[in-house]
Amino acid sequence: MGVRPRRITGLANILLLCISLVVGYAVVEVTWRVYLYRTLTLGITAQILARIPAAGQEGTLAGASVYDMRTGHRYRPNIALARSSPFPVSWRTNRHGHISEQDYSKIPGPNEFRIGLVGDSFTANVTNTVRWGDVLQRQLNSSPEWRAAVNERKTLVINFGLDGIGLVQFDRVVENLVLPFSVDVLIVNLIRNDVIRRPYYRGGLFVGSEAEIRQYVADRVASVLLRTIYPEVFAVTIGSYFGVKPQLTQRIKDALNKDAMSNERFYDDPSEAAAVGRESVAAIRRYFPDALFLVHPSLNDYRSIEEQGDAEAFRLLTVATPEAGWVEMMDRLPRPRSKSELESWFNLPHDQHNSDLGLTIYGEAVAELLIERSRDRIARDRAR
Image (cartoon, rainbow, N blue to C red; front, side, top):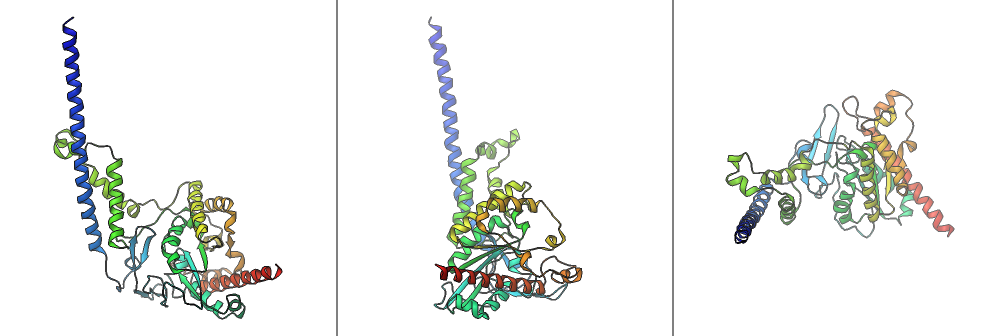
């Protein structure tokens, strides 16, 4: 009878020892992670800040962009890019980093009507010397009917297009780039392929204030440290003797670089692509309920070629978002009379983006659409 209490006491002592070891290790692990949080946040932030270049440099298209944590990338302000081969390219950015020959303030003038354009390279037009947004602006300002519709205000078209991005990022562009410029009308211009694009990021440089960058880094460092269950202290001390290697620092770097370094360019599942696209459309319409969603025809649309499942994803998206009122611009463009005429609308054979001629035709068609809609609106108002 006297042996059992001693046995129980021994087991209790062993259990207490194990609990003490676990608690003690947990305290050391937490302390180490707090240290990692502080040192990595400061170190990585300093590295990023040191890599942000000054504006005004010229160079390649890739060099014209800096990484943006919200929109994927932005064009650097006050730069110019030009080349003559294999086809002419010429454009510059203004002080806001918008592709434009014009400069303007964030706050509209009293006699100014603003139209914002959101889209990918078919809107940014970085493979051209012409921007269809400029054509649109010129056509509208020269139209007496349009000027009357906007009470004789001067129309300014602001190009927020960013090459490479997809629909999944368009709402971020609206939220972070468009809203500060107080546009009156928003045009979302996309090709079908935009629907299946995953978030796209260019380069390893950030755009934003030092506080924004520090917060961005801190959030991702904290996320990894809080969610990862791993004996990091054991790994950095004696783990090498047991084949256990430290992981947290590398996982943090991977988290910061995941989007920028990802090789997965497209969604494999059209349903998934349509679902994230629907969320983006809904977010855009919360800001701009009357946003105009245009489907810009690509060369593949004219050739009836489907790639990467984009046609199915786009079909699912339009079925799920009838409120967007998708406008198929191919139906509003002149029909090419020959193969050679069609090819003249694109930078063939070197590139499948629109040529300067193709963009001019497109800009004129969008202007006709807006004038037509203003006419219909005026007629509805008079009928009330």
